Image: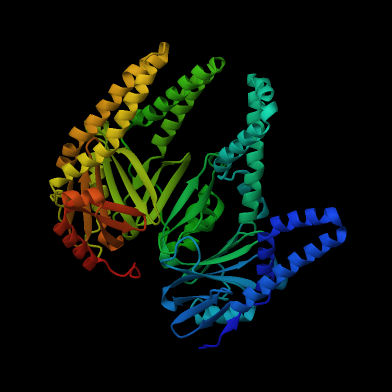
Length: 462
Length: 161
């Protein structure tokens, strides 16, 4: 085992220099413009000075960043004026991810991110540039060797798949309010003109046009975001690990130990469901905080392929997803009541604000009835006694979500009864899995609650 | 498996005092503010005047319920049970909530004493899992420490998942 101290690849110096340059970009630009007024010579001088300083900072940071691996731990040192040393015990390392941004790819090197179980959102240690040999050596020393073994079990997202993924991206719902906010800001920005502008946007026709424009803008943003995140998505199953690669500008290779997978979510978002397409998400407890894109097991899959896909890549969680238990027929109207009440409130507010919009009221109510019936149809459980898994399905945040989880990995079981449910002898059952994913099946009968509590009983886990 | 026993542990009786104080701390200022706003609006015509008359009394009623009725109701409904395998809670004044946390999933335990809790001599036991936190909000100081120590003894290292 090596114990010598290593530096990162020189590409790290360039990356740091570019970072430093972007930090001083604003003052530099101001200086350039101000200097340019006097003579182009001073502007050039100033620009060179800025680039020189950034290069010096990059080199100094690169010089100060070193790492060394002992039998027990990875020692990482960085910082020019106040060097910090991070020591990560090897047996606490959960994953070593490979990332390669544009600079790394230019030099043919890659970066390693070392994740530990305790760590928060960020990786404990980021080694931004290593040559292939060094990276392999380090991975081996950390016990996370890059299994080069060729496996038949792999699946790639096709170009067509990527296109459909991006077109139906669920981020749409997130982007929309942002664009709306920007639009509002823009309008406020045009102080003098805003009033006349607003007055001109008052016919229903124009409102619809503006809304459509916003929708298209959101769609374009979300489309670009998905293409960047999911380009070249590939999954491989190698022995006890899932290897997931993705990314357009920044290539990421993440390796997830199968033992750490607590469950899988099958998400049928509103846009994908009519196409019978789903997204698969991983439920991981121990791998630090990971954003949604990082938790994607596969971005787009025909619904009928889900069971075979799991059988191939995660046989540990494979099996039937067919539900065995549903809420009773008498619960149907309860599923409808809540969205209808919400729709009535919304419709009332709309009509008070814009009386001309009254035709929207019945449409909203009809939509609410549809959503309620759909939620009722979606809800159910599978509690097979000979199965180490539990399957729950429900509408969750405008999508139909099926959660398959290992019973012994459930973080919490819940049973709740509102005043109304108590009167009707119904209850809501829920489970929490991994980092805060909760799924609830509403309005089920008491015998099913009993079965739920017995099937998932933590007593006897030991 | 034998039927699961109903949770039978109760909270410290001082929990009622704790919740009353906490409700006073937010209910008092809000009620005063509501009467101030109501006084300013009462002279107005139409909707504003009606709101000015009704709002303060509505806020007062809600505050009184939170200060007088809810603490006792909540305390009477709260039950908890801890064995070697699970923490079983049942509570809720309006919505009845049962939560079962497998001991095997608990990452760590805190005992938390807010300023008001210290005044009445109770403590909260907060149990952390990957999915979030669950708490027994008010146990007598000594009992909270006992529950914490018992849980600490039961928690195993996160690696034997």
